[in-house]
Structure formats: structure tokens, C-alpha cells
Length: 214
Length: 214
DNA sequence: GCGATCATGTAAACACCGTTTACATGAGTT
DNA sequence: AACTCATGTAAACGGTGTTTACATGATCGC
Image (cartoon, rainbow over all chains, first blue to last red):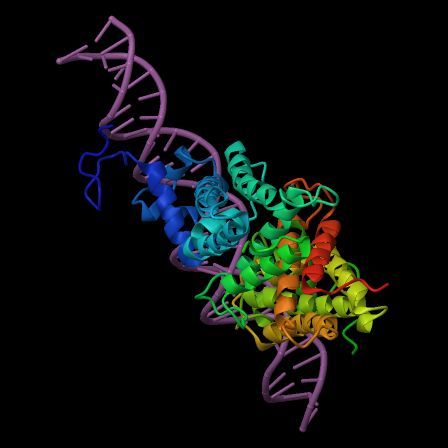
């Protein structure tokens, strides 16, 4: 653990970088957030890290594998954030679900680089196990929440929690990709995306017969 | 209208192509459907059309303008398809809305190149007037449908049609982008995307108090 | 300590891409 | 028939992804 000689913050370095993999991930986050996943370039990440164009290939098979790594970390952070918002369903599942929705959009807005790598990079899901698993972890947070949501419904005609989770996820993702990035000049909305999502989920839960607790 | 000497289907041509703009659009559709909008290349489109790499610049300022043109045409076709599905709200707005949903997903699956150019190419909406206008036209079909949907609701607490349209659009788009392309190995669904969307819209309309007609 | 090993860096090369520039062609107009 | 101008080509530029051969120096057995 002694690679940190005097590296931090633009100090000199020797022939070896010492921490290139992590630096490349940082570079990817910075560059993707500025110019989108499509405009992100392996060579530019190398330049950002102050390293030759071939060096990144010692750590990632190709550009897609770097993005997949970023996406994996993104899903981990995303799952953690949603789980925090859910907070074991407190104060009640209905309210906690709305908090998940707001957390979803907040993540998309505050971490555009992660979100871009996760959903807009067009990565094949079979690219890496880690990638698929961290995505699953995220989805399972939602499923868990939806199981609590439908738990009190009468068994007759109770909707499957997975389906409810898919609906809420799809609605959130749709709103996030169509209107989620505030600074871009997208289609003007009559209300903030957060309120649009909250209203949609409210109507949807109403349709399921799930009422806001008194 | 006499450019068609003996051009169609691989025939010889002289120094001038004669129909390059349209051919480039065809090329874009073919190539984007095969390799995605991100992998689409101006130079490859030129090769596809049997023309030098500089020739496309006589017809489009750059690669993005070509994609914007494709996206415009896509929105026109999309609007036409949704309007056809809506069919003036017959037999009734409730049923016709479900048909719009199925048409939405069918378009995303059958015209991946259009859909990709329209939503996944990351084009700034202010790129061209035509682009923005054709997108608006599509959205207005949905708004029109939703106005008919909420028409019979009691004025007190009637939801704005634009909001309902945004909800249905976002849900459809979310499902389409997450699960819409059948041949790709995306997350396995417990049901076809069409059924997932239909179920979601059913619950949502139920929540609005809109019942299926007897 | 000390040398061998091997992960991790560089440099150079290749093909491809987007874009611009100067020039060539030929279709339509007068 | 001559002119004009839209539309093609060829050549050149810098940037990009990727591979290859080579350089460096951190780590570990001795």
C-alpha cells in the first residue's frame, strides 16, 4: 500500500503510473459527464491520465470493457442510493416508494456519467458477470419494495411484485431518459420530472388499490 | 424527374450519382439497424452508396445532420403509425389507447434504426426545425388520444391530458428502451413487452377512474 | 542485499474515420 | 454552343482504436 509516494494532485510520477486503473475510471466519469458516452474516447482518457495511448490496454481489453466497469460501479452506487431511499420501507411502503422514485431521478441528474454508461452506452448485458450482477442487485431493491407494497392486498388478483417493479422502473427510466437531464434543452415540461413521476406512480398505485396511509 | 436512367439495383452510373441524398438515408437505415446509431459511420454510408468519402458533405453538413434527417422521417412514420392505431378513438378511446401502446412497441421493434436515430442518438433537439416539429407531431397524437380519454371524467380533479400523455409516453418509452428489442439478450421478462405495457396502462387508467367500456 | 521475473509503462505502426480543400464532370439554362 | 453551378473525386490533415516490440522498475525467492 505504498504506491502513494507523492502522486496525489498533479505531482510527478516515474515510469509507472501506479494507479492507472482507478485513474482511468475517474477519467471516464469526467469525460462521459462532459460529452456523453458516445463521445468518450479511449485515447482521451489516456491523455487525461497523462499516459500513452496504449497503456489503458494493460487494464481493459477495450473501450467497452472500461465503460462496463464504470457501469458496474454505477449500478452499485445506484442500488445503494435506492436502498437508502427505501430505508426498509419506513415510514411506510407507500411513502418510501415515492422516495425511491425521487432518488431514481436524482441519480440520473446528479450522476449523468454513471447513468449514461449504465443505460445509454448500448453495452451487451453479457459483457461481464459483474455488470449483469450489479444491475440485478439494483432491480432487486425495487422488487423488494414492491413486495412490501402489494403485501397487504387481497390474495385474489394480487399483482406479481416483479411486474409492479417493472412498471415503476420503466416509468422512471422513461421519464429520466426523456426529461431527466435538466441542463439540456429537452422538451419543456409543465412540471419538474420528479413531480411528473410522483403523480404517475400515485395514479398507478391508486389503480392497484394501494392507498396512502392516513 | 428523369434521373432514373438505369440506376435502380446496382446498375452502372456516371460521374454523378443522381440520387445520393435518398441513397444515403437508405444506407443510414440499413447500417444503423445493423450496428446501432453509435457505430454508424459517415464514411461507411458513402461506401454503401458507392461514392467517395467527401460526397455526402454535398448533402449534409455532417454526420449528425444525416441522423437528424433520418430521425425526422422516423418521427413522421411514427406519428402516422400511432395515428393509424388510434383511428380517431374507435371503437372507443380505452381500446384505441391500448392499440397505440402496441403500435408504439411494434414500431420500436420493427424499425430499430428509426427508433435508434430518434431517441438514442443523443441529438440536440434544436438541431433542425424539422426534427423538433416532427417530434411534436408525434407527441400531439398521444395528447389528442388522452384528451378523449379524460373527456368523460368529472371536471373536478380531472387530470391534464398533457400529463396523462407524458405518463403513457414515458412508460412506453421506458419499456421499449429497456426491453423492446427482442433479438438482443436483454433482461428476461416474465411476459412479452406488449403485455407488460398493456397491464401497466390498464392499472394506470384504473387509477384515473377510466373503465373499460362494457 | 540481490538478481530474476513479470506487471505495467512507452513508441511506433496500421487501418479507419470525419472533415476540408482543390479540382473534375456534366446537366440545365440561355 | 457556351456558361454556370450543383454534384462528384482525390488528396490531405489530425484524431482514434488497437496491436506489436521494447523499456522500466516493483516484487519476491534466495
